[in-house]
Length: 315
Image (cartoon, rainbow, N blue to C red; front, top):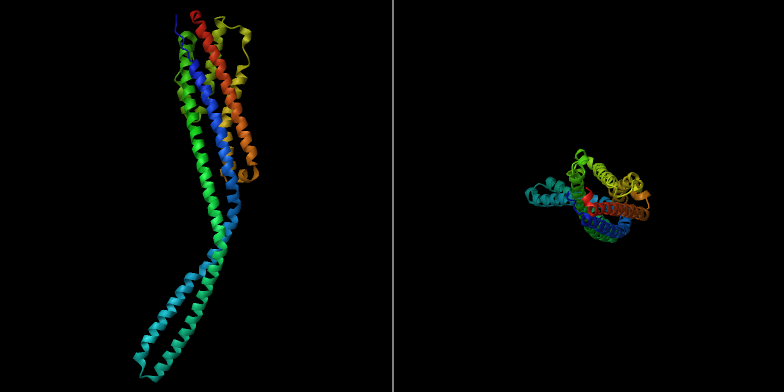
């Protein structure tokens, strides 16, 4: 009599992890909406903040030149004043130097006045800009804090989802190995190790986990009918069931999350045109359907595993 392993516990653990992932996903959506509430205000106020900042920079732009001109003429006046003693005996030179000093003083006075006007304009502009800057920075801080909270919950959700994938892979591996031990024709089927490799290989993982489990499911069902453990007409439309499950998984995990990122974190059309609350609700619905489908098919396979165990003597 060949040994058939009892893998029901791993299947139930997969179901529990699926529910836990769903709960955490919903929680992450809640925190995502809290982040979005602040982020939308921040994005909306950003143009006025940037415009005010640009205007302040345009007002500050002449400051360096004004200061440089004041420094230049102040230095020139100081140099000319020191030169007076050197030409004290030359009346013509003294007169020319004095005229140069007077012109420099006048120019210096004009430059100092221009500098004072620029500094005054900057001070006035800062009075208007600082409240705008403070409000925007507060929104940035709130957004960063809300995003950090969401990121933590999202990371926990991702880690738990990966753990669920590992448990799923172990569960399907053990079931495949068990079936391979009692059904000689299974030597032509995919090796049990594909339960792991199917999830790891890029691009291939978009279809291989489905084809591997679909084959496992159909062959287990065939083994049960072949041994008259279940009647032939008890088969349902499992191809549609498993295909729908895998399609929902791909949509929820890949496409749905991509749309979420585009709608909540992008700056393109999706951010402005899509209703964020609707996107969040739709994402939850797709994840709910995916999880329910996976819980259902795991439960159905667990029943087949139990039937094989109860009728082990027929294999």
